[in-house]
Image (cartoon, rainbow, N blue to C red):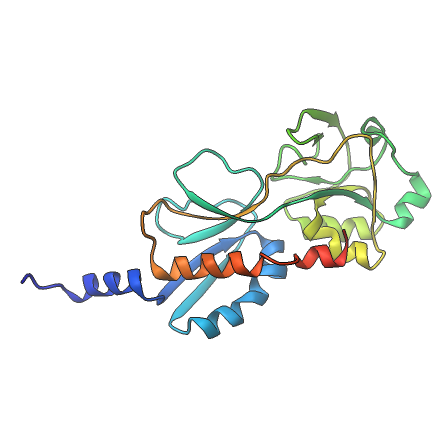
Length: 233
C-alpha cells in the first residue's frame, strides 16, 4: 500500500472534516453588518475552522487560490465559479428630510439631473455620471453630484448629512430609513434589478468541508426573514 505523507493526509482530512483556515472575502458594509455577527455561532458549530474575513468592496480573484470563497452582490459575470444564492438585493433611491425640504422631491428619473446625486464609484450603473433603472438597466439617466465614493456606508453618512440623493441597496440604507434619517424617493421608473446576493467559490466537484460548512451556514442564516427587511420594507 503506498504511503501518504502528512500534507496529503491533511488535505484529505479537510475534504471530510470542517477544519483549517477558511479565507472568505465579503463587501465591506455587508460583511461588517451582516456577516461578522454570524461568525461566533459558526465558530461554535465548527471549532476546528479558523476564519479569515477580508472586507473590501473590490472583487478579488478566487481562481488564483488565495481566497476560499466570497460573497458577491449584484449580477454574476460568466465565469467558472460556483454560486449559491443567499438573498435578493433590492435598491432604493433615498435622501434626508432636510435635503428634501430644501430641494424638493424628484418625481421622475429625468428630475435627477437637477439634484445633487452622490455616486458609487465601483459601479457604472450607480456611478457619478449616470444611474440605471429598470430590471435590465434599460433606462439610463444622466446625473451630477459633488461626491463619489467607493463605499455605500460613506454615501449613507453623506446623505444623512443632507448632502444629496443616494441610490443604494436596501440593506445599506434600511437602518437609516428606520430611524427617519433618510426617506425613500419614489420615481416613475422601477429601481435597478441588481441580481441578488450570492456566495461564490472556485470550481470544484467537491470543495473542502470548511467551505461547504460555511456555505450551508450562510444559506441557513439568510433563509428566514432578512435582517434589513425587518428594519424597513
